[in-house]
Length: 255
Image (cartoon, rainbow, N blue to C red; front, side, top):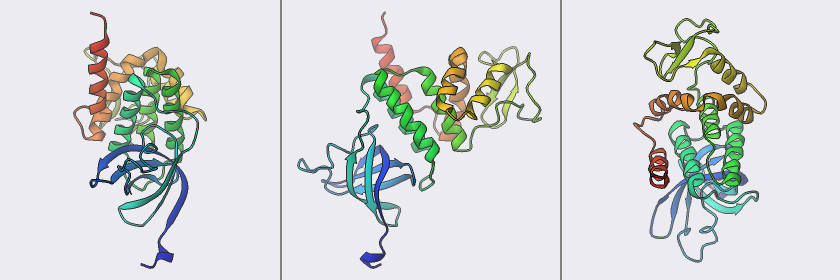
């Protein structure tokens, strides 16, 4: 392939999701870009102390990346901070890393998700501003990620019959079957109005804020409902970063 025919992409909004050592001096970085989705880039020389890439290629910071190439792993050319917020710290950093792990697990490469990218950017900015994770922000992002990746069933109808939820009934979300009528032994079932409010929030133009509001009255039960769905479609028993969050919280909790 001639140099003239090599595709180049300039100043693309993106975030670093994860990085791997590639050689003594270089890195492979997994990034989430607005127009090109998740992709892998080789950052040559990024581990050298004098590299201009070294202080920039950090997770949870809004970046502008330029790269070239057509293969599975492209070549990073330039990277610069896009401005806005700095990287979250403490528990907020762990929550953002949890976002990144979910994106790595649930999104396939080279599939654009511009709306999800914008939601992710908003959620990360909220983490950076608060300095600690808001459980409702986490639940809202999980719902939007599941919807965007095609794994979220309709939350306003029963999964097996596709009939509208009964206002006075409670329902449980199952990984393969959608919502089913709750049994008396189902601890974390949610009443139909909660599911209907969440479904309406998913269709709101400002879905992140709408879902934060809709999830607040039922955030603990919603977390218990979404966790099996995320584990099932992510192919994991537990997300590593979520376990780290629980371990940190256990250490700092007053005894």
